Amino acid sequence: MPVDPTVLAAFVLASAILVVIPGPTIVMVVGQALAHGRRTALASVAGVGLGDLIAASLSLAGVGALLATSAGAFAALKWLGAAYLITIGIRMWRSPVSFAAEAATIVETRRRLVFRDAFLVTLFNPKGIVFFVAFVPQFIDPAKPYAAQAMVFIGIFVLLGIVNAYLYALLATTARGFIRRPRVLRSATRTGAACLIGAGVLSAFAPRPV
Image (cartoon, rainbow, N blue to C red; front, side):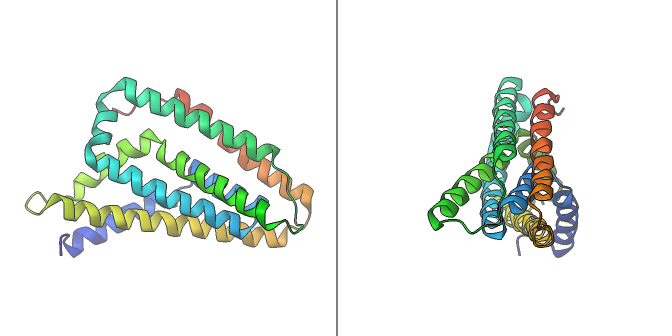
C-alpha cells in the first residue's frame, strides 16, 4: 500500500473537516438545488468533482508552486475566478424559480451550464490550488514513491468533495420539497446568489497567501 493506514486515516479526517466547511462552490450547489431541483444539483456536484480532480492534480504537478511564488499568475487567476463567480451570482439572481415541469431540452441545457459553472468556479480558485499543494506534502512519505501517494490523496480528497457536495444538494432538494411557495424559494435562491457575488468581491481583493 503506497500510504500508511495511520497517515491515510489522518488525511481523511483532516480533509473531511476542510471540505465540510461551505465555500462558494457549495453555495452554488445549494442555490441550484433550491431553484431547479435534484437533477440540476447533481450536475453541479459532478462539476465540483471534476474541478477538484483537475485542480488537485495541477497543484501536485507544480502549478500550485508557481501560483505560490508568482504574484502575477496568482492575481490573474484570482481575478478571473472572482469575475466568473460574480457572473454566476448575477445569473442565479435573475434565474426564474418554478415548480412547474419543464421541457427536457431546457432541463438538459441548464444542466450543462450548471456543470460548466461548477467546474470552472472550482478550477479557478487559486487559493484552493495553493492550499492543496501546501496541505498534501505534510502526509507524503519521502521514502515511498511520490506519484502513487499523490494519486491516493487526490482520489480521496475528490471523493470526499463529491460526497460533501451531494449531501448539501440532498439537503437543499429536501428543503425545496417543503418550500412550496415560489416567493420564499426565490428569496432563498437570491440569498445564495448574493453570497456568491459577495464571495467574488472578497476573493478579488483578498491578499495572496504567504
